[in-house]
Length: 340
Image 1 (tube, rainbow, N blue to C red):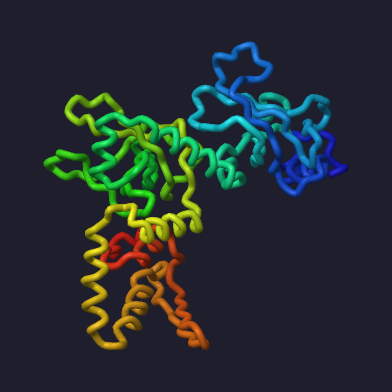
Image 2 (cartoon, rainbow, N blue to C red):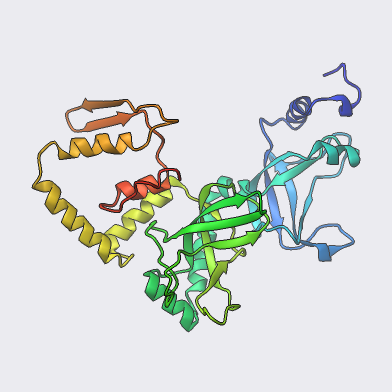
């Protein structure tokens, strides 16, 4: 890189290599402080917080050719929701066009979604505290929804996808944290599945994925006092496999879901299968594998018998949240939904 005198002539890969060497880091994951007030700005009304004290190995990060520590103000229009405190966060190069216009080819920008991946335990504690606070007082309409849906708080899992043609974010396939279906609104004669629509993209999350959201009553529909919307004071959380399995276990063990229909299906199916042929379970495993080919390629399977286990492997698609829920339940008819 000694042959280059002007960073504007460098490729982004060369700039990243140079910054990693300059800051003595492998990537741009740094410790930082998130504040609920903007920092060093003449227009504080445009911002709702700031990211300061950005450090690597306890050393403040400065751009090359500058002696001032890096900081970022969080725009008021940003849908990123946060807690004050010390966190790890990932950063990335700002767009080349913006770096050139501001004459700083080393400029970074925060990757807000990384906050929840890099600080999972801390964010889970915050979420639990918020949930406990939310339980203190609920309206009668909220209590009716809790009873009708068989839930104890305002958390739900939803499938997020983006309609590029109409520039609309959609959250549908609404489910409880144990992935049981949330039914339609009370008194909905048409029994329509709940679907939430928002103009533009929801920042910080990736389309075509399930997330844990928080809901509130909208209060804007005189014909439906139970109408909900996403409460963006709580950042949507990615579904961590271990958290989800723990949720399923706690739900089944404590019978929190009030999902008596699932229990009835469970007993009915067990009664039928235990009285069927001994090979029934083997065929079930084969059928489950066959339901999930990758790009239409036939699925190969392997059985391995050990002293304690029967190990079943196949070349089909990877498990997702819906698959885990399906295999932990019985008679829930997951077929036909494998595209998600």
